[in-house]
Amino acid sequence: MTSTPLIRVDGVTKKFGTTTALRNVALSVEQGEVVVLLGLSGSGKSTLLRHLNGLELPTRGRVSVLGEEVSNLSGRRLRALRSRVGFVFQSFELVPSLTVLENVLTGALATIRGPRFGLWGYSTALKRTALGHLDRVGLAHLAYQRSDTLSGGQQQRVAIARALIQNPEILLADEPVASLDPESSDSIMALLREIAADAGLTVVCSLHQVDLALSWGDRIVGLRHGEVVLDTPTADLSKAEVMEIYGRVATSTRELEAIATELTVAEVLGDGETDVYEILADALDDTIVGAAPGNSADADYAPRNSPQWS
Ligand SMILES: Nc1ncnc2c1ncn2[C@@H]1O[C@H](COP(=O)(O)OP(=O)(O)OP(=O)(O)O)[C@@H](O)[C@H]1O
Image (tube, rainbow, N blue to C red):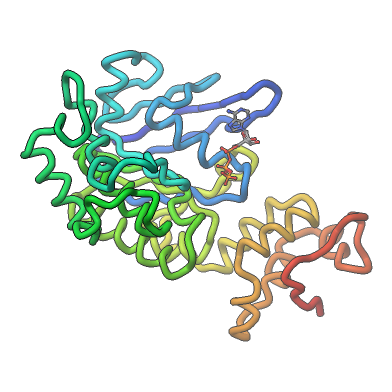
């Protein structure tokens, strides 16, 4: 017997005016899966995530989440669905003037009736639960500090605790470490993975770093210009294969350069491993390969990170 997917996206196209952000996207996510949406800036990752809790509605196609067709929901029923889907943003979206504890408690607002006056408006039981979530993310000792006094990594931990107080079944994370330094990024991603495993959460997380996506997700869904160009378990993928897939879909040297930059060129070349440009070039046609610096068809082509062309 096959289980019903928790998330099902069928033939979704999303247009913003003349921009097509998503093109005929299909995606199914099963209970407990940890899926990475991987793609360059503007490939449609945020737009797809925002469809999964009704922040955006499709121009064409259907989105079903936790058995509900999102387009059919509004008002109380949409809020009810959103309360089962936690969302972690790149920019944390905390209220700077509130304490850490109050920020976490705002995640439970959907369950509270009547006015709230600071911490007094929340029950002792709820405050205890919020403190438990803060403890889970390692920040119980900062509960009464203003959130804008925290580091970026700490603020993202608060945002994770705020999502957890919803007791969500699905966790969506939109580039959760894009604003963080590498050390904080590693610890936040490890924390998210631990929490997902402990709570049996289904996670869909957008990232643009291939290394991180490969080491972190169960499955990678690659997007380019709003289209799904890859949907494969990470166990079946090597970094070179992901690069090749990106390479095959690059249509200009500028795109090729952006891809190589995303692939942390310096790190790869520094290790004396495979030359990213060589792998990409292998996957591209002669026109692109011939467009190396000094030989470029793109007048304004200027490589960053300066990897050597052989
Ligand atoms: N509200 C909007 N109005 C107009 N265009 C939009 C809107 N939201 C997204 N877009 C456009 O849709 C495309 C996909 O954007 P999206 O933010 O989903 O990409 P992304 O892969 O998440 O990029 P990034 O990694 O930079 O956040 C882009 O061309 C973007 O400019």
